Length: 345
Length: 257
Image 1: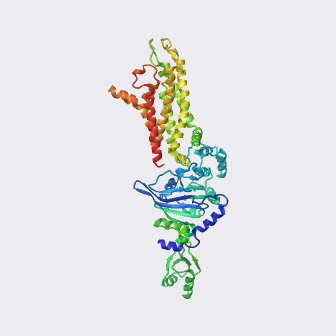
Image 2: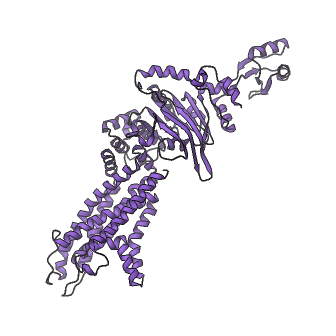
């Protein structure tokens, strides 16, 4: 997939427009002062021995949107998050939180709430006490601990030892910890792991509510299906860099191309007519369905009518996000929707 | 720094491990001291250093201190909680400093109880061993010059062992390895020095070993015949602790977590 085709197909609604509208609507309430994006990652390079873990990872996470951070295992998602949190060093590149490196933040939990590994806690300490020491480290009161316990639905189990928590409960505890400082940026690594269906539904609604409050939300997953109903924006990673950084709608449109689904019982005849007119025809999943590219839908209808080829349906082909994801991570080609500034040029 | 210290204190008091290990230090120290005081037999000429004898339990009581101090940091690496800690407190020096301060406080408190308990056991048990019959042996008193120095020095010794363990654990990041290294350093070095035939090397090892040198601070008699003086000896242990903490701080700063 070439860059030029992507640029031409990614027009539609301007990528930044939805975000800008949303941002305007929330700017009066919570994040009046926020002008810089929540997280800006630029040109990260990192090596573990012979393995190139990060190879020019760049993207940004904006307030008011859930950004999905997807890619196969080992693509560099967790490494990138550790770099953002100042846990891992990089050979090159910068990762900034509201314009500042993480290690320079005085009370970092008031700026970024993060959850990397839900099991990273002392099994003998109660959930509440785990949050309490974190609160004390940021100069927060114990009252705040009880608030986040309520919000994550963990209050009934708060005084039990965290070692006895299920993975889903640990995820909630980790999220409670991420919310302690009421941060404008929230970053969660695989938060759906170990959650039961109820928990997954709760998590989706919860992530959307965080974004609706004007926070920048970055959520990683190795499964597109987990984030596709939640994320507004996607950063797809492969082999240590972002292979796509675009809105969900733009991504689908780009991968779908100008393809048209054609349902017909006369597949052979239709293929002959359309190929003669310059289209490329492939057989899709269904027995009677063809995917046609290179011709607009109305032209296809005219051509088939003229040749008296019967058909029952002509519709725009919509790629599923899984398809988008597979295509992007298989090729690992650079893919990027135009940024608002590029579009203005 | 004050908030970080408060957080570390909350961490320490909300799990049961530290309390048990500190109680273990007190129990082992007093128990071994009491045993030594009750089995010692002396001639009419007295039998050497009563203060040192009644503080011998420190040699055993330091083991739980080592375990506690190693777990304070290596335990966090074991569970992965170190990432949470460093995410909440990104300044590495602060993280290590508050751990050192908290550890110093709780080990000094437990060490004081352990040392006073040991001296009390000596004071109770030694007269029964015909000690006091010998002239020049007043009852042990923690307020009397050399005994006071020995008592205070023993408490300081225990805190320095804690800091040494903390530093080593920060470097190796593994509980078992950390405990093994420090206990080996403490207990195996004296064994090695005892098996060395050459008196020159033997004396050198006794001067630089963290336990042999540090516990010289407990001596109250024949100080001039010791391989190293009481305070310089404790200084050697302090040197070990400082070196370990600095190395730990450096690795914490430059290595990925």
